[in-house]
Length: 170
Length: 430
Image (cartoon, rainbow over all chains, first blue to last red; front, side, top):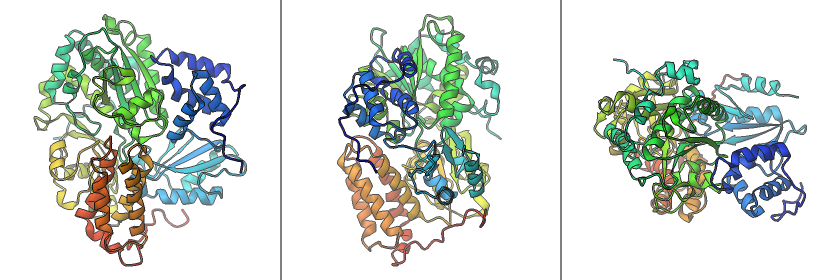
């Protein structure tokens, strides 16, 4: 494991790519303050940096919005959808809150563990997947369910989970 | 007699997702009607309907709008709360995915009524599909002159923006949402000042839930008298979405007149799953105290559920059959609140952690005889002692576990832990 990231990164060269900056510029005019685009900017940066926010990405966003990096870190650590360590190319989130628990989410978690052979929030050796349990995803009528990347998969069974995993790129 | 759906009338009609299709189904007539009225008259009409907020607190919507200072000299905002994250709640996702223009129309009417020129729809980050659907609908509205300069050819200007959250239950709390919208950690603010005075970006702001706003076009089109005639009494009016899940045959979002009984709802959802026996139900999402089968005839409106010792909240109904361990269920909810506490207020941050630890200890057979009292004591120290309602929400299910279902805890104090067999959900080898 690498050392925990420094809280005061120095990445003088860190920049968002031009396409991301253009996307951000279109958003800026929608808000009365510059800071309001911070969360949209982090979503964009996370996409650019492959699903997580290394220190360099945080430095790039901080520079782009003219904010202290500490402010940006504070926001990143608050929200569950922002990650500070690498995630799989496919990120699997399993709802385990009450409605899904009542309909079998624990077996969905167990199936993922058995199939992927890694623990929760660990990367498969090929970097393809990581999975986590998650709070209610608002799909309780189709419990148990999980989200793979942006997509909801509903009314799951262990068999269905295995099929979905097979359908992801190898 | 079957209730004619109002809010869900366009579900299953994919054409409603386009502007032309929605218009053909009668859409944007409410907005057109509103634009021909004085803004104050629109507020009066909504007030007269008796509509109360569908997000959880049940505050009268028209009254909320009337708190916004008059005049057009200063900016004002509408922030639509589409952060739907209360466990058990999935009604707003359906409204946004199936009938996006109904929501946009409600937002536009509200903005006109309070003279707000900007609307943000704050949608939870996980609702990617709903966000895309709304984005597409908004784009079409701009193109066709429903949004932007001169709404429907009037002099009213309106800008609308989808703002995606990033995964935090607390951002459904109205001031937590405002902080998040401004690009900060979603930590609730001290109130007062209330958002109607100092809200988004320091300006007067209305914050309404998706379902609340979805009701508004119908109030304008069909009139407040029609709306008032639906429901239990003058304080509980209109159609209501109930999201039912857990151990029922057909979980889903159902529309009933507000005040339908739980028994009727359950029947509409096909009854208990696999013919099980009702042990308990949560009437209003994870924050609501749990009720037992003796309350099966409770009318599911704000005031009747409150009188029964719980709350209607977001009307997310979670049903549990008699194979369910309630200690385990409440421990899961406690874990949720512990995870979602923003950490700002000590009683909530520390207390929710202790509730989770204590409930897990009981579930795993390490409970001690005084633990039920200890749960109550911790709950008492959380309740009313923090800035927002998350702490109060966290203690709702816990208190009902001790007070109504205390025997469940006793069953666990046997040195061996949970007496319930863990249900096998899927056939072996499935």
